[in-house]
Length: 82
Image 1 (cartoon, rainbow, N blue to C red):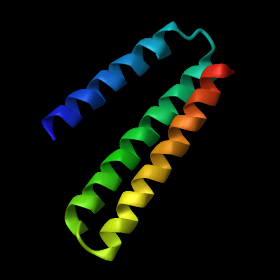
Image 2 (image 1 turned 45 degrees about the vertical axis):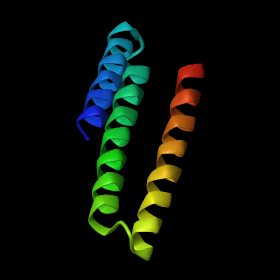
Image 3 (image 1 turned 135 degrees about the vertical axis):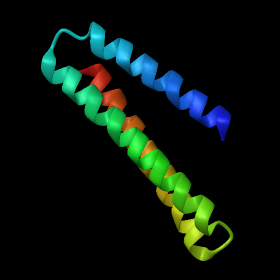
Image 4 (image 1 turned 30 degrees about the vertical axis):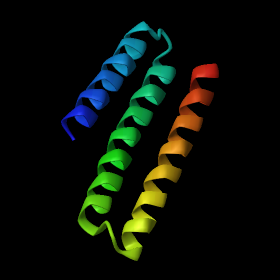
């Protein structure tokens, strides 16, 4: 868990550096929004999975976490291209 938090903090630092380097305010807001989405869904998925792992809902939570993370990464890449 500690390593996951360290990885998350590194990701946030990278995102922060990108926000600072972006001159377009709209793009900076988009970066910030996706950063918050990543944190929110990562925490939510992890908490749900930890609380109910082993049950059918635990499998749902793991699937939910994976799908949402993939969508966020896909959208983040599209934001990068724009």
